[in-house]
Length: 193
Image (tube, rainbow, N blue to C red; front, side, top):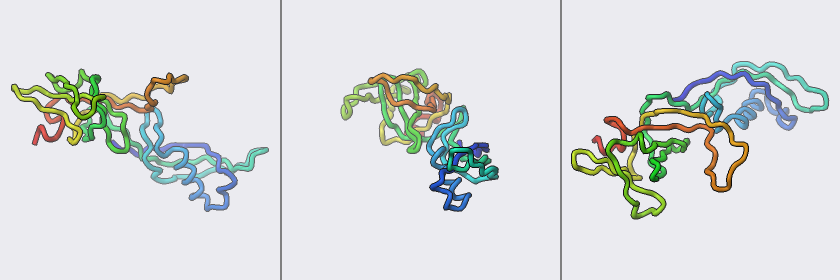
């Protein structure tokens, strides 16, 4: 789920940071550049782990900043396909579920990866949402907002950045995890205890 990834990056350190110790200035700039950002095919950057090396310190003509080549390691969130993770229900619609880990909210369970057979009913509390119910041996097992939900990672995708956005479109998600609940032990933990 979490990996250490080594990166080489050429970066500019602005003159306003040159009064700080070099490691501290570069650490701050790396955090500003990478923290809480998704790097395609790598994952969501959670932390700058350490700095391995700093080379350079060149000042280019007509630029007051120093440019360094930095080798460093990042802690990234990138689950693997098949991994089982626990999350909280964020949204329940006719298209499926949206789950949240607290620090990452773009986890979707589409209808075709829900437990089979299941159906949805209108949510009495929230009119914009539905309540999904798994039917098993003539009993109904609802998926409720208070439940901890275990899902299996089915796919991780890094959609291309849209050039233009419609007014009605949802916010852009640079990393999307598709999960499934269609196996034993998956779904709300309360189903299995």
